[in-house]
Length: 223
Image (cartoon, rainbow, N blue to C red):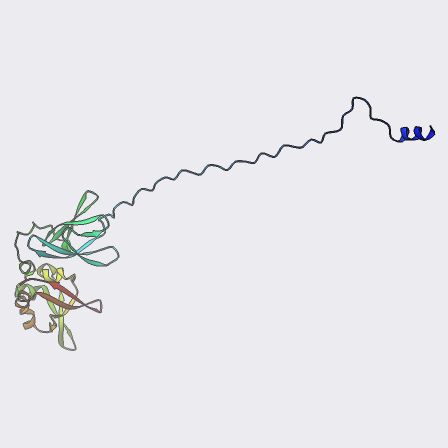
């Protein structure tokens, strides 16, 4: 009995009505939801290049069509035919011996050669030689001899309006023409022979100096 009493004291029975403790677990934390991606907005197509900044350096008429030498803002020159693309979105639509028309985004702009006024369109069938023709007197008045060491080495352009051939080749006032068709332009006689040489050629090569640098331009003509 003594032993039973000790067991009862050391290990008492659980009280009536008590329940075992339940361990509570905290709910999982609520994580923030990522924001939905922004809608993709389609980018508008780039606008056509503006026709401003172009310079007309020459016009070559061929009947009712032809081509023009046009210089861009970066100084590069291109030969563009009628109906051709000058730059993205810029079309060469019309030519006259002294001007061209560009169309950009429905806007028409006229480029005039050497600051002149736009001329009337050339008559159909007009020969390119006629469009580029200059008389011996035009060459004499439009150029002056340049001498080095007492001898003539070429002729400087002083009046571009008299010399459409050189305009169409991209030359400018102040350029020194050294040779035409490989023949040195070193005398008055050679200068006066130019109209006949141009009229009898399919193409004309022009060697010239600009700012101390030498260059060659070629113009296609017809007999």
